[in-house]
Length: 99
Image (tube, rainbow, N blue to C red; front, side, top):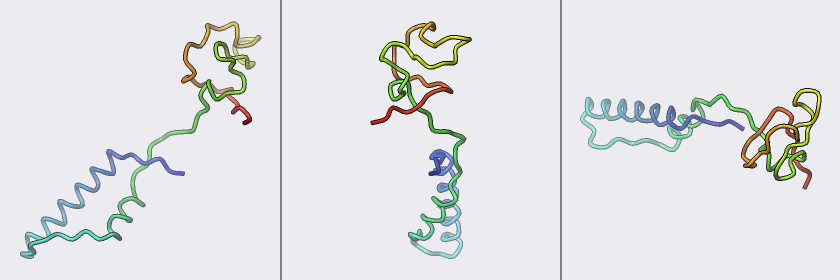
């Protein structure tokens, strides 16, 4: 899976369209045609973002809804850390819950 940078893709597409319009104006064409093939090439060559998938606390097998019980904080367990108020956090030790 590739995560694309939509802002960069839009800028790339806008630049491509402006170039096509300029070419059409120079040749006297009254319409600019962008083909499906053009769109596929733009998407296929879209810049990507630097991202990695994460497992959120709420989806981790070590999270009980209040504390995270994985090994990793110092020499003990993470439940000595402050309680996690939201399951939206994530960490290096996360393991997905088995469903």
